[in-house]
Length: 480
Image (cartoon, rainbow, N blue to C red; front, side, top):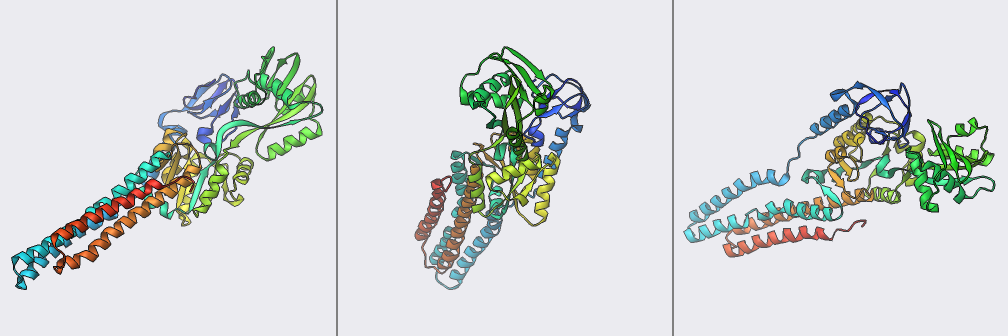
């Protein structure tokens, strides 16, 4: 228990719960037994397993996903920088203009002094310092401010992508939700007190290694404090746990576990269980001393900031889409909670299908941003026009993304897009000023109306203006 499964294979001995959320996005651990298939790199969270390897090396599901990431990254066209392309034409044109100015003034009989003064003024006024500073200064200030806010921008080509993005695809597990099973609600029957339910159920679950049991134990300890030690404990594979706590014979697990002990859920608890399961949550029955007492709801909880983050993304003109390998009921429940429309929910997709969903949206003419954190998101992050990786996620996702959100807070995705767009706007205004200054001043210099000293001062002022304009990015505020 607690170890990663080494490679793809089939269980030949033992039963356990396997946490495959990193690969599949399924937040609830999968119960496996003899004959069931398991995937390499998933986590054995419960019992002891003996696995017969069926695929190794390049044939494993993880290796196939790595190839998908490579293919998606190789398919991205290399961005060309506008300033570099223009400079390649601009410099020869200016030299030719300076020579033409020299020739004109000499031919006009104005003398060598006037001719050289005008030609030198042309060269000085056209010195492309502002042009060279336009992009790197804005990029340096923008990326520096981003780093202060926990947003890491990989390069200038990323900025262009943010301007066109109109759709943001969000992974569910670990991005919109916490990625951890959490105790969300307690429903009691009869005279049972919630605190007593949590004490007895939490004490028994604390002795189990199952992820759902750990969620119950953690939630109980948080609400009622220290938990008693069970006097007797037994794990019932696939059903739950049973034991003795403070003299009570306690059962915690599936409804089937209670049925085996000839106990039934009363109508109120049965209704609460049905409603929880309809919302995509895991319902756990609790009984002691021969009577069903409570139903606990456990699920991958939505992050407190996710609904606000979705609202901010909408305000930027983006359409949010929820993409997950989890089941339809869970996905729709999460979407409802954070404000994503039901028609924009894509559930029960395999890891390799996520990249197909992104590609399909792109084929519909959309410019797609992808936010994810798992190995199963890496290929989709690489395929998307803009990939935003949660810094709390896997190395594979961070490597595939264009932007990294260090805090793991989805609100940072909206801040990242706003900052990137603001930085791009600053670069564009810098380039406009650099070109406008040259276009306006070159005719004056060629006409002999500017001497080299004034031209030098004007050239320096244009550079100072560009740097000052870039420094305005330091005032960028998160959540603005």
